[in-house]
Image 1 (cartoon, helix red, strand yellow):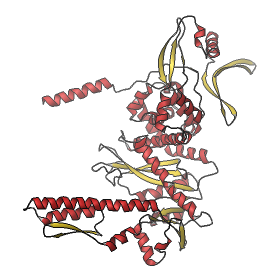
Image 2 (cartoon, helix red, strand yellow; image 1 turned 60 degrees about the vertical axis):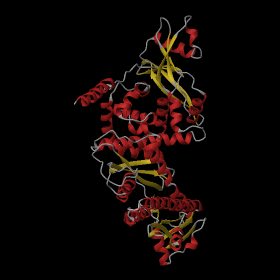
Image 3 (cartoon, one colour; image 1 turned 30 degrees about the vertical axis):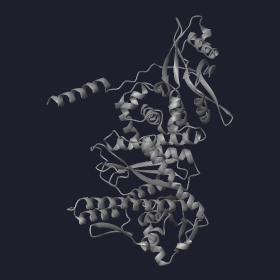
Image 4 (tube, helix red, strand yellow; image 1 turned 120 degrees about the vertical axis):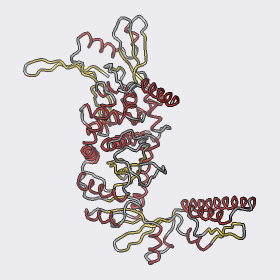
Length: 558
């Protein structure tokens, strides 16, 4: 860090420019960041800055009396994430307006500590966001208005991020999948009853689509009503790639429930290609037709072509063993129920055999083993009959899967198609990170449709930062969450010299913090200038507690 003090002449007038700047290297080239413009400061203040920087290694030399110190705001996490947001093009895509900076703070807050807009406002009371992003005080209502602003510009921001990242080298393979997120309340405008992937019965939900490149880097996201089917979301993504992103050569990669005949037709209309998988009943049907045989399934990848459609086969022996163990586990569960019912029948002479048998049959149906595990009774004893032929038939496709594509073999080998389909696990990882593991999309504390879309978009942009951190810290023994918390522990120190103006310094991070910062290529400033902005919330926690306590007491009295 240094003071850049220069004079220059313009229109026969002499001007003086004084900047507080920071130096760092990128790929061996020296770069500079301007931290603050000091041109309006007095000569005495400029001298004080220069003196402080000169003695930054030991500021005690500036005074003979002992200075007092106190803890300032957290700097490490916000400074680092702001650096990454610039590097990834998020700051540029958002812009420099107040709303853009508030949206950037919501993205940062999601990475640092997840929660509502109210919690993001409270978080700003502990982090130096106003100083680093150069914004004035705000409250939770300002963040809600910023969400409205963000939702209106989502398409434009996604387009700019896409063009800045890929330029003229646009990817050809696009991974796409959907998930759902449930609500505790009933008032969200997009929520509806649908297939709940989280297994939460009696909860409305929204459906979220996420598209990434072949490496799993997020490109765009879209929110749908909770009752839409997976296949109903694909056409929107095709139109995005063709119209918004202007990509001509596209291969959409989706699972067997995503890309079906209608979606294949939609893709062909744009001269796009697809990679997907087929279901077990479809495999059985193709075997009966003689298009391929069971002998083709092996540990190695095999392939045949039928009517310009390529089928890639493989048997995963590890997956086959898992399925076999799972099948025997289901049978053990049924045996335990049968033994329990037999004990009950033996101990209760008036108990009906038909009722106990019905329970066992229902259990075998729910376990999906009823085709080969038949429950019958002899007198008052229930027995399980195993149909070995049906059991062998059920197990013959264990670990087998078939991929389907219209890509020509001259463009992509069977191994490349297989690898691209396996890349769908990157989208699944993204959903886990966004929903539960780290960024915690739930709870969704908004009701309006546009704010719901903005909330999911903020989560996606936060995942883009987490995605980058995961790759930068891959060889460090910390999770992304642990690394962010470590950097958040780096706070400024307010120094109070006797009879002088206070100033702030940033202490040297712990060893782990140093490693994390070096992996990103970030250097924290030695001296930190605070604008002393106070962030306040409109809702007051003490008042909320008093209201809740009053309601509880009032309910007890009545």
